[in-house]
Length: 435
Image (cartoon, rainbow, N blue to C red; front, side, top):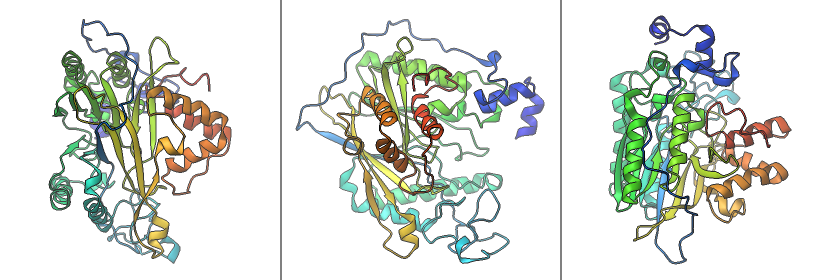
């Protein structure tokens, strides 16, 4: 893919570096490819304070799965340190030279993806708790990380395997999907859509591949590919006109996308903050979030992106899923995210022969002692974690889904993680100045 793109692009080496790596390059960006969508002429309504529902009002619960990365070739006992981008596979040329390098039965913290046995065990568990959620969202990435070896036939087979599990174990549960960057062939291409599952509530699924920094095809034409963000703006205006609330699904978190896509998306979130009740993402494999701020008052938080932890353990993280509780389906519902519960599989214990079971890791209101999950409360948590290292270490533990693999004790590491929460807009150089 790289050679045709580099032959066709007008960028020089510095611009290519800036395009792919953003503000970490000597040339941090490429002004020539900045663009703006056309916003509606309808003035932004006054900001409405978010309110919690009264006790006893109905709720709905939403299961989020993300970044499954199923590897049909995973084999327990294979070399987990094979030196390739993906290990723990049946056809690795050299066997594991010692016990410490053998892949675990249920997965492995090293550069290995999800075994079929682990994925099916998850669905057996979800079938047992199916009364604990009303519908599911999947925020992308079904195949393994063997991108050099993927074909259209195999991608379709992986899609059918996952669909088959939903049909077998959760046949009555609706599922809404966002395209990941590993689904298509070639990767980084796909679709977007909107759907209203309940009156007054709309889901918008964004194809974030059209703004992904790893999508080199965008160096040939990065200006709102497929007109997606213009379409998104029109969908949001229509939702506002109808008084609907919107939940956004996409694979990539907005702060980790190309600057023009990220900045236009950020403008839309600002404009429609009264309408957007939440954003669910994946891609990073970690349990994290991003907070959006008012473009005129950078201290006022306006929205939150929830980045659900991956099912794959690739790498240094336990498999996980989560269930959100939201204001429910009744006239006048706010549809706000009220709380969530994060569940994980302790790979170390499971691979040692103990019971492979999914257990509650935490709920943010309880763990962080939050009053609610409104944007301003998440913003306050950032500064509480800055002042309280015990609270921050709890966040860092949850970041890796209790894998215990990556301590973060010095201020530089702590600053990077806290700043990352505030950076829902790519290459936003000043947003962390007050940390």
